[in-house]
Amino acid sequence: MLTAIRGATSVAADTPEEIRGAVRELLEAICHKNRLREDDVVCILFSNTSDIRSLYPAKAAREAGFARAALFSAAEPEIDGALPLCIRLMVLTEGDGRPVHVYLRAAASLRRDRVHFSVALDGPSGSGKSTAAKQLAKELDILYLDTGAMYRACALKALRAGLGEFTAENVAPLLKELDLRVVYESGAQRTVLDGEDVSEAIRRPEISMAASRISALACVREKMVEMQRAIAAEQSCVLDGRDIGTHVLPDADCKFFITASVDVRAKRRCDELRAKGFAVDFDTVRREIEERDRGDATRAVSPLRQAEDAEYIDTSDLTAAQVVALLKRKIQEKV
Ligand code: DC
View (cartoon, rainbow, N blue to C red):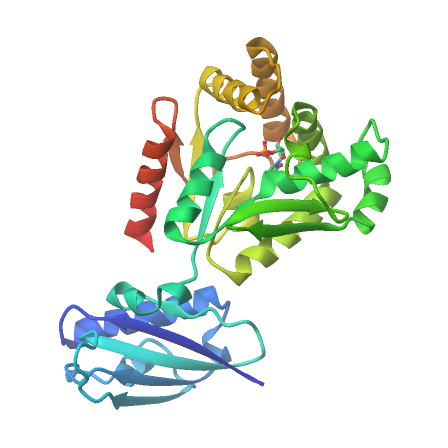
């Protein structure tokens, strides 16, 4: 079985150095995103627009270290309105994995739908990450996955089963029969537990603490992370949570760690809960936030932590719209 991976890039000028650089960058990105080694590549077929004359892209691939693959280059006919100085390729590999096609530089505009990228937004509760992630996904026209909702659904299941303490022994049997699905209605995430839409039920304040407690169990995290990775592998997405950049998607294209002062976060959480009709008191919410922070950041398995390559953003003095604009600009600079 062969898998075909498509890709394209462009050069700023028709020079051998430019072509070498662009071909190497494209092949490296294809190998990285598809988890390929050079030996896995059976053959690479290139085509280039006719304004590229100084070096065959196939020769640049050979120079980039593709010693064994069969290589081929062809010039494309001149077509009015075509993207100039463009190199296209098809990489054939052994295996039947799901291909991740890669379009770089100006060629990214050719297939916006095929440019697969992921954004990891981590941070403590009330940092504004969910609000930002939701809006960001809408503006970038990609999927938003609220991973906290999945832990909340696990907590709801355990509470409904009458569990007070959560231990690996009493939660593991529930996970075996867990029927948890994340579905999208008009672009909004709905969380479905055992066939019931629990999207509102999991927002109740008592579920927040329970979610934090149950998320400390390794068996729960393993199951949730597997689901999260499967969803993220399918399409471009923004994931928000506590361990996205450090554990769920360590290769995410963009990583951010979003936070704000405890007072600001408590106020935001109060406003949000009051808007939903819950009578909450600021000091209690503030204390619970601190308690959750402590639990989430000190648990043994995948604690809340900034990934080394994540950008730190303090949203204390920013409006939601400003956070989204800032993130969007940074993402567009990168992908
Ligand atoms: O983001 P949230 O408040 O909905 O998350 C609820 C709890 O779930 C939070 O206290 C910690 C946990 N969580 C986690 O451990 N890892 C994630 N990726 C997301 C949430």
